[in-house]
Image (cartoon, rainbow, N blue to C red; front, side, top):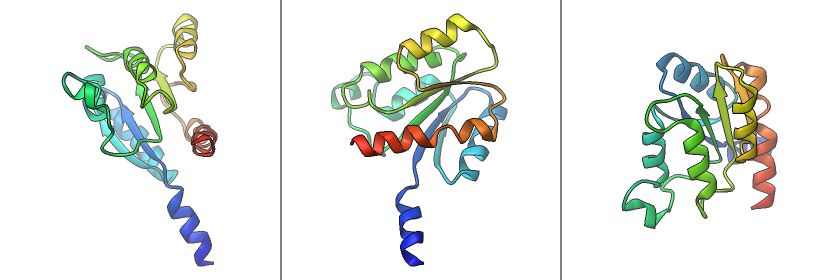
Length: 147
């Protein structure tokens, strides 16, 4: 029985959630925590880049202080959009294998296609539902097996 508890503790994945809307941030944080994910929430693409070490002089360092297993980000944000964030992550030698999921309240086919072509794992329409969050685990498990 204790082996089950240990296995569950070892597979707690850490998700970085990025959204400029406090309501959407709280919703995604609650959904992820309900699914037993460890969650770090930031309110902008700029903050996400800083957290990931992809800004300014830190860029040469490019080492993550905390291991992130997945990034879920809003598409429409000021300054650095979710699409910009996705591109910067996929261009990073150290971060390119982290699965990225994009969320948007707008169902625009060209936007969805662009994100998927840039390497997004999923594109969720807002409001994000528990059924959407349930789709994340296979991406996390596949990445863990590969590394």
